[in-house]
Amino acid sequence: MVSREYVLELLEKLSNAFSPPGFEDEVRNIVREELEGIVDEIRVDALGNLIAYKRGSDKYPSIMLDAHMDEVGFLITHIDKKGFLRFQPLGGFDDRVLYAQQVMIMTKDGKKIPGFIGAKPPHLLKPEERTKIISIDELFIDIGASSDKEVREIGVDIGCVGTFATRFRILSKKRVLGKAFDDRAGLTAMISALKILKDTDYNIIAVASVQEEVGLRGARTAAWQVSPDIALALEGTAAADIPGIPEHKESTALGKGPAITIADRSIIAHPKIVRLLISVAEERGIPYQFKRVIAGGTDAGVIHLTKAGVPSGVVSVPCRYIHSSAAVMDINDLENAIKLVVGFVEKASKELIKK
Ligand SMILES: [Zn+2]
Image (cartoon, rainbow, N blue to C red):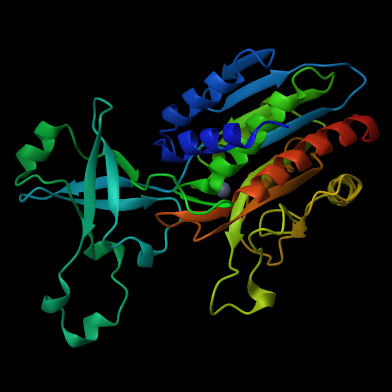
């Protein structure tokens, strides 16, 4: 196992990095640094997916592990005369979470500058406006400029992208807060599992994919290229073990272990993958839970439909407040996800046949 310090440091570095869909350079560089020297080959494909090969014995199947590098972000679409920026989402936001958030925007020359999502102040709202959610059309980003000319001098223009500016924090001995745990939790699990498995004889193809949040795009072309025997997508998934949600609707809960997907909107996980994950967890005493709501989709949704089909599954780390400016996660769930992935590779290599 890798140490807790390593897991926390890696998660912090990945969570703080800037990586909206289509602009995943910063996270890709971190993944590359972590994997250099522990895999046999790293390459980046035409769309920007990082594909790392850990080659082993021919007798073992090739196992694709996937985690996406992008996070929900913003695209600047208009700059007004007073220097305010209008924006559109890149990925699925809930409009409720945008107002009054701090953001960072990448300038054309790659610098990151701070900004704030503003709207009409409350005392200027009509009574009927006070109770309604402020839609993205009414919001704007203030970067401290007083004219469109000044915005452009700062280096911001239409086409620049941004993310939330939340910094990683440790909340308690077991829980952490940060942005983009979807899917930096999955990336942390994938990188850690590769570190643990580096001297083994298994065949692992680790894909850090692009553009998941806008429609599972990178994983589609990556899976086609690597054409694995089986695949496992590693994710951060919604946990709703919070006030106001009945237990049967919480989907996943913090502290109860990684979540195994039976089905979501994009896939019915292959029963042999699900059975294998459960047996690994039970044999090794790794706590686990099922994802208990059929919602959302993951890269496994496109991976399993590649070529003649790839038996695929999903392991996720539960995260509260996903797709907002921050998420809260239990570090034990992440560590147990790493153990489950390692166990999966070991057991699947020995028990599942090649195609
Ligand atoms: Zn995700």
